[in-house]
Every structure is written in structure tokens, then in C-alpha cells.
Amino acid sequence: MPNPKPKKRFLIFGFPILLLFILFLALFFWWTLNLQPVDKTTQTEITMTIPSGASASQIAQILQDNNLIKSKLVFRLYLKREKLDAKLKPGKYQLSQTQSLAEIVNLLQKGVLEDFWVTIPEGKRREEVAKILADSFTRENLVFSIPDFLELTDDLEGYLFPDTYLIPRTTTTQEVVQMMKDNFAKKISNTIKAKANNLDLSFDQVLILASLVEREAKFETDRTKIAGVLLNRLKQDMPLQIDATVQYVVGGNQCEAKIGKDCNWWPVITDTKINSTYNTYENVGLPPAPICNPGLSVIEAVLNPGKHDYLYYLSEDNGTTHYAKTLEEHEANIEKYLNN
Image 1 (tube, rainbow, N blue to C red):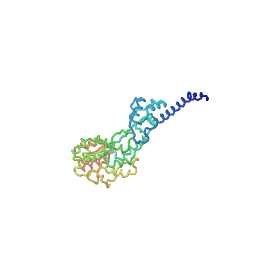
Image 2: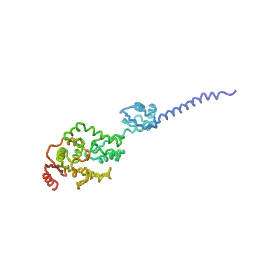
Image 3: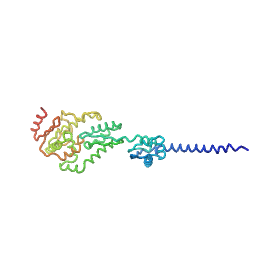
Image 4: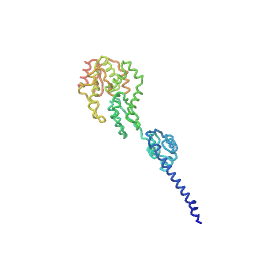
């Protein structure tokens, strides 16, 4: 009869080894599978927040609740293996189910890139606003499309509210435009708009006037007085004769090929005989649209104009403004303050 001892030895020693090997393979496939993305085909990004002081277990739960990882256990074991338990940073993240567990951990380890601030000063035309935004995005190594911005704001001159904006790093050009429009709607209440009726003007006309005052008034104390001058001239059907309206046309022509680069959008005017509906030397009444984006204080100045009989004003190089009720007085001011 054959000796049964080798078979017994296999059962005693070989079977456990085989079982361990099968178990190892199962664990390997389980581990590898749970490191993979939840869904490689989805295009959806998921916004989630890791609170300050969250433990690895809590972070794992948040990720699983958002269906971003397959296994909390594998996530925690992976952190322990890589010694990253205490290196995940709190913040608001945009993650995707197409990211592997390792990719997600890498992002959580780097932390959230800070949102950044951009200040849009009062009195800038939309091309200048576009450059300010583009320069800010470039400093943050982000992309901002000036052509897209100008296309989206073609009819929004005056409505791009000057302010300091906190820009999330994922913000698109279109979202920036919407952010500025929303801010305008928030700051310009219906109460403010209703005050335009007291001047027998539409709010759009008030905004046009505000853009003129924004460019003309060098000091805040002159805003209501200049607004009063412009309204007085409108009532008497006198051309407004505002240099800034001609600058708007000439600057636009000169800088059109330099959009996004340094350019003087408000050049010194040497000729007022420019063929344009914006030219308030050649046309009576308001230009067809704002020439810049005025701030709230200037809009309020136009809605509360100075009550006086002035029809003329001029400004010295230092910004001091002198007013006159008659052409003769105005010419005397020119001789006294500008020709000496």
C-alpha cells in the first residue's frame, strides 16, 4: 500500500499556506479596489468642508458621506501607512469621484488655496476693470479671459460695481461678471433708484450722470456741486461740454489694440470736435451710456445735487474747482487760474 504520510503532511502544512495565499490575494485586491476612484466617468465636482480639528475618522466619514471614497477603513489605514494622520488640513474643497484615494489625500494634505482679494476702484471703464482682474488672476497663477469679460459686459458699463471682492480660486470669468452685477443690485436699493424720480430722471440717466461726476470731481466735496452744474445745464438745453466724455471716445480708439496692456484710457484732450454720440461738446443732453463705473457715494451725490445757479466750472491741476454763474465769470476764472 502507498505511504499516506506525504498527503497528510500537505494537508497539515500546505493547506494553511494556500489559504494564507488566497487570503493575501483577497486582501490585495480589496485594498487595491478601495484605492480606486469611486466613479471614473462622472463630471460632477463635489464641494465639501473639513472642519478645523477634525480627526482622521471624522474626515473619513465626511468623505464617505459625500461618496468620495469607497472605504473609511482603507482611508484610515492608508493615512497610518503614509504617516499622514495629523497632516490633513481643514477648509473648503472641491473634489471629484474621479479622483483616487491617494489624490484626495494629497489635496487634503496640501490644504485649500486661499481665496484672493481684488479691489476695483471707482471711475474705471470696463476695459480697465478687465485688466485689473486679469492681473490679479495672473498673480494667483489663474486664468482670466479679457475677451470673454468684455463680451459679457458689452452693455454693462456703469453696472460693474467698484468694490473689494473676495474671489474664490475656482471662479470663472462669467462668475466674476455675475458677482459684480449681484453686488450692484445689492448696493443699489429700490429706495435709491426711486429717488431718481425726484429729478425727473430715470435711474439709468442718474447712473450716466454719476459716471460723469466720478470722472470730473477731483474731491468728494465737489461732487454734489458739479452734479448741480450738470443738471442746471441739462434744464437749459446747454451742452454739458465734459472733457471726460471725449476722453472716453479718444481713449477707446487709441487703446483698442492694447486691451490688457498698459494704456492711458483717459488722454489729455486737444480736440473736442470728435464725431461721437458720447461727445458732450457736439451734442446736447447725456451721452447714451455711462463712461465709467461710479461708486455709491457719487450716485448718492447725483441724487442729492447742490442747489445753486452755477452753470460752469473748471479745475486746476491740483484739483481745486472754481464755479461760475455766467460765461463772463467762467472766462475770468480761465484767465485767472489756467492761463497764468
